[in-house]
Length: 446
Image: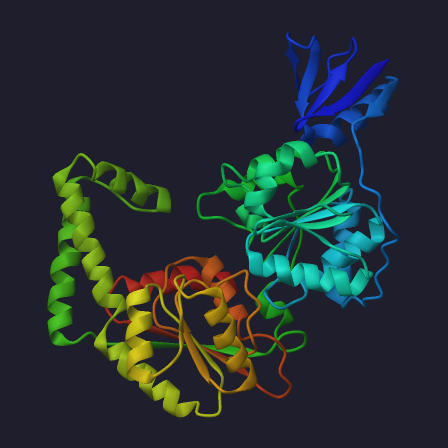
């Protein structure tokens, strides 16, 4: 007879049989396993015909949780795929396609205590509002200074990490919103310390540049369903077109760019270094701490990139776009705050950066939503985790090669608007490394 119990994010296993994924603990004279492996342990014991007592869970009292939401076809397909995978796995859908609705239906289906993990306080508030409205129950909050634990609880990744050891046996279902955050070194411990046998991940972008998305198979259950932007555009999302505009550097900018870029490429050639992945670039960054030439090369590369991202010609092109869309609602995206403030000052457009206070940000977005403002310029702060108003024109003045950031920015203009096509402009500096950067992020549309 085996006996299972829970202690601080681990499963304690007492008995004679050796259980997979467990290790012997001499102090307690028992086997221990990450709570993550609870379901695997139960399946092993059942399949092996081994008798056991299960004292792992201390589930929170749960009211009846029934949703009346109607799923779109692709949403039902995604939920069915998740169910077929033993109610585990990641669903990948574009921004604005209703991933929250799928999560709500999963909660209704299982009708059991559920914790939803989100990356930001804005998303925490959005989930709480929707769940409270749908299920007519009090919804707990773990984050932002609050520790209210209920049958349905919304937690930030940071707070869930802190409290996972004591809460890991309180919920049967765990939903990870923006699940691409989960494989981070600290956050993955959330999945490891929760025993919840049923797990759902939601994201618009599954892959991580560091390759750690491979961990999601172990932590959540791997990808079970995916729809690309182009598959939903026109019917469930706005139809859209991507318009890339190449602008020339000024003569002075071109000379300075070529000089600095040349310093960087010469260093790569002399050092016999080829950059194929972000990890290759990180090696140069690490080398710059002890190699003066590497440091000089990086500084030159950053200077060249800064010239390409902030070309004077881009400002003139933006002026033309603003003139051509006087009746449009625009989001303007840049990579760095310096350009945000420059645009804001020159065109009198409200700006949102990570420094913008929450109250001011809310006020700006509310005025954009009501039509008082027709444009907002921002850096990375609106890429994810914030419920932004509808827009129909996006302008990327500068950005990285990240497919995730590109999809998030495109998603900001794709909410369905009858009879109106969304436009995403990419303004890139010709004959610079920015051309290849744009090609890398555009792969997300394939």
